[in-house]
Length: 170
Image 1: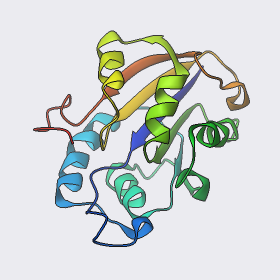
Image 2 (image 1 turned 30 degrees about the vertical axis):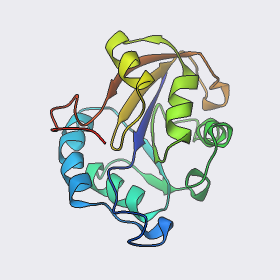
Image 3 (image 1 turned 180 degrees about the vertical axis):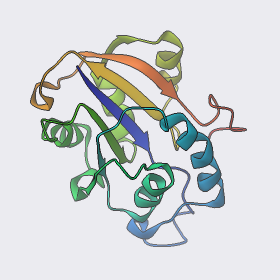
């Protein structure tokens, strides 16, 4: 069984503050990640594929564990949903629990497209959208990431900062 964790970057500074690629986390985003990092702390993870943008790097840095190798993949930055699926399918075969850190709209679309069944409360939240710092955890009965395909996953959980106790989502 393989497990995919999709982590959308936390709240970033406004688009007028810097070139999009260089936008860093806002104070609110760093606060979101305190809550989300505690949620991620107990999850088995053995590889992180992260968009190289400043806000995704910072998001991962606030959540990372030293034992989890990280690879920065430029394709994630502006990926469409099909491109993001391909990135996951090309993950190292030995990885059982993969985390992708990136951006909407592709993350929200991929999460919705991969899930067939699962946690009803989480599915309801996912249908409402994937706000900043949201985390989708999806399990697949596959032995290789190359076999990852749409509508084959079971949503184990979908959490937003608000569902984890942060005051509100945006």
